[in-house]
Length: 252
Length: 208
Image 1: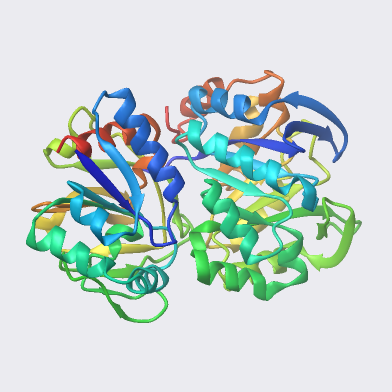
Image 2: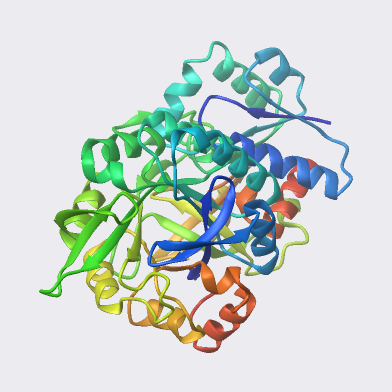
């Protein structure tokens, strides 16, 4: 049986892991390669790196980090942040990434999604979406690290990128991110019920129960978390044991 | 013992190379591992690995665009019967025909076709993540526990006859997880991304 994946996410800025509350107030949480090795040993099913500044001058720093991580961790690695051109995807895959996540450029240039999927295969292309709830209880797509509003509906956008060849959606609730108050389950349910591709739930995990809710209620195929793992509040092993007790299939 | 990992510009070469090097070192195997697309080097190798990430069509074109690589593989694997391992698309390419991005002829080394998997609400496509495999008795799965998990990521499956199937997994229906025909071995999952089980499998291939 296919297992639900637990994915620790490392937000990387200039070669260092950071994690903030609602995308601001970043706090240093260490060296990404060391952190990745710990997660690998603890039983993470996959790792995710998001280069949150992604300015052109620290591109090489990111590629070095990806390369060192891939040399030490024998589990899948998804890398995103600042992916704008086909060459960015090529460089990341060459450095050792298994999947590449695209956020802003997928919004501004839809044909890029199609081009990327055709060239490197659907399974390699993850579309990362920052979603924010509006006053009418709809969700809007935001770009540029959550700074820019697009006026686009999240559900429509998800279906569009799926049809263009996206292999997976990394769905982050901006309202929940960093709050440790649980996933936005309504958003998750809406998205997972409409799509034929897997969805990674992100934003809001604070307790063991939240992981189970994201899978059982939200319908997520994977759950991603950052702060709870970085600061040692929860261990991956404990999360998996908890989920296994709830009869959720996990790799132990 | 020399192992050639074929570089045709596709696939996660770096990861495959590092996983082979780690297994080689941790199990004290003394193999020499080289990433290459030079026919002379491939000729001198004792074992050959064909990785693959991307589409059937693009991978096929990429191999055919490098002078002499396909002919060398054919000579070494089919005529000289050297041990061969294809990973993911590197296994799918061995089929007679593939239906990803059009209809294209594969190597035709292992009879069968590569067809799109069908999505349903409970079975999203790509089939992505860790899934349990069932395998037949073989040196290649030596010291690997029954019902072990391996990492899969694919939207197309290799349909072949039962005698070519060495391992299978369940995802809505029975899916080919590994094939074996004489000296030819292939996995749909990624041993280089399958942590300790993957390391053991790579070790088993190196001393196959």
